[in-house]
Image (cartoon, rainbow, N blue to C red; front, side, top):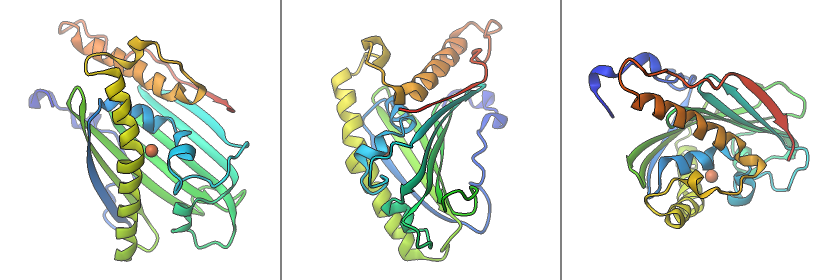
Length: 250
Ligand SMILES: [Fe+2]
């Protein structure tokens, strides 16, 4: 979108390990959501929704040890969710060869403005370092079409069972179902409730702790949009969001 001459390749977020040539299998999909792209970002940054809306991805029990972490760095917002010693989800068990019922699971979502998200989802044996278990990098790439319509491209890569075409089909079916049957109706219902013209924040919504990352991202985005609207030469560039990190339990 925008003037092609102003496109800057250096601004494309690095979603490493996406883009590596070999050693990974890729499953990708697409949905068109009848909602503003920011509502989809809200959903993706509130990782607590997984436990309520996605039985296949949930930890199969409510875990009191879950730790949420919000990290802001420059214009990037990261929403981490650590689930130590939890019952490993049905989805992760498709990739995990361990016999352990419990593991240290995580879902860490990084947002780059305006709407590029990278999710590191995985599990290790309890106490083991990340990298020793399963790591499933997900990309969520949102392209606004209209105020209330978004093209939602997603991809997941894996470095295990890379030649398993049947697993590719299973992953595609499960992820598509979760997004289309579980997230999409909720997000579109939100959009219908809000209507086509209002911004969510203008309605002064009740904000809960898991909304912190989404609110942080909305603030960064609002600052960038304001800066872009300034007359040329006056644009302040990135909003001063600073770098901070915080952790809290819910
Ligand atoms: Fe979801």
